[in-house]
Image 1 (cartoon, rainbow, N blue to C red):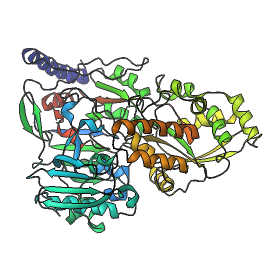
Image 2: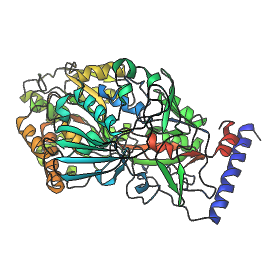
Image 3: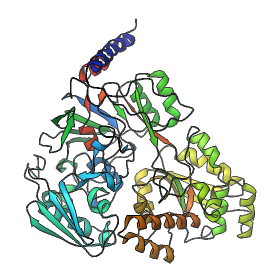
Image 4: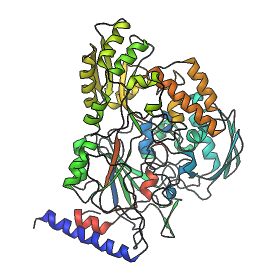
Amino acid sequence: MTRKNFVWLVATCFMVAALVLASCGPAATTTPPTTTPPTTKPPTTTPPTTAPPSGPQYGGTIRMTSHDPTYDPYTWDPADASWNNDHYTMHYMDRLLIGDLMRGPKGTNEYPFTNREGIVDDILTGCLAESWETPDAKTVIFHLRKGVKWHNKAPTWGREFVAADVKYSMERLAAAPKIGTARLDFIKEWVVIDKYTIKVSLNYFRGDWAYLIGWGAFCQIVAPEAGSPSVIADWRNATGTGAWILKDYVKGSAATYARNPDYYLKARIGGKEYGMPFADTFVDYIMPDRSTRVAAVRTAKLDICHIVDPVDVEQLQKSNPELKWNSYPGVGSMVLYWRMDRTPTDNKKVRLALNMAIDRQAYIKTILNGKGIMLNRCVLSIDPETMYTPLEKLPAEAKDQFTYNPARAKQLLAEAGYPTGFTFKLIAPSYYPVPETISLIESWWKEIGVKLDAKIVDPAVFTSTMYGKGHEMGVLLYRAIPSAFTELRTYSSLAEIWNPSCYNDPDYQKGFEDMKTTVDPVARAAKIKALNIMVLSAYTGVLFPEGYGWTASQPWVRNYHGECGVGYWWFGPIYSHVWIDTAMKKAATGRE
């Protein structure tokens, strides 16, 4: 017997023992993967139980990669308006509101929490705010938790979190050049009522207020002591109220976090309340190379890998049958945005032609391992049809772009004045499957006489170029969707950094302004549905099909069910609920 086989024999004994004990305790609940692509075998191991009879375990280290492990942090300041910031600060900074994990697979299983970008308002609960109320359409009152402490390190030294901190943080955010008043112009003022109560007076009602100031992008609460540019720019000064304390950061390697002993949120498991986090240490690895991530999963150097590409799942299931898997519909899609303010893509016939040259079924087969969602924006396919319109129900003008017809595409180019085609210049970031997608686009467009001149650049360079509208003709990237409201907002102004197509339609802008101030949620949903069709009919870019995400975890990972977020790029509270069966892990790997 080899040493490797012996190690896994010992680990298997621990798993069997745990299962025997579980049969003597309360019945465990499990959550199967949301969707299993037909080309991939189903998981072969038992999903984790919600609460093993022995109860949660403290100690050990969680080693993982998040949904986008390809980037180092561009900034440590939420006011710099970089989604990449949320990726790292989400572990130690908190927001006012949060998705209620106990209404997910850990509890009532009402909501899967598989969208890393966003959650629905119906599933919200309090985080730093214990509760909130809206006495009228222009007022929100937050009642803050008492006794919450900032991290006991410089510059906050464990002092109590109070309402004045919220006021400072939100006013700082509104004044930030990269946020601007356009995002928060609906807010009139923040008024501190007392130490634990703060009122928000609104200039007008806005339907996505909870996203903008409660659980969404960039609204983490920053302490006044940490808010100056010179302080917040240095990761060593990172502080918050969250479950994890940033202890170390090595560029190109990992960010390491330690358990916050003063964390205020509790876990309720098996009828008992427990302090969190359970693990002592949490390591978020930066692994841009796909093969490196696969190898790290195979050799158990990662406890959780949040992004396993579909093409690698079957391979890992064969080599490592002990792994646990969760699958879920994707939350966006690859998009090729072109500038609608410049030739030749200011011509609608050109835009339709470029779309009709794309073989989306081939994309699903080649890139998505045979299983894909043809239309997944600007409203997600998992959203109700009160907002989402399935492809087959779209009006003809919006639906035509999804038809693969190279002959018709060539005819449209000729009608637009480009009978011999043209050269299209594109920039894109260097992550999977961008290079593979570029190769396919190049071959498809070649058939209609369009030459693709693509330049792959460093992700940081790409983001800076796109935000500044520095791209000459087009950009290609994966774009996830926090919510339909948020995605539609990006088309409402040329000033929006996520409007690389430079879409500028006064009728759309008027419709969006009407929708965002609509108080009735049913009426607002209908307006979202109409705005989505308007954008689709404009052909703002090539919308590629979306696939299914896969998360792998090792057998010693407990109380994890594939949850991906409790707010915008907010994973830290999920891992605070997770514990490691350290005996099993040590038997298998020699590490805790």
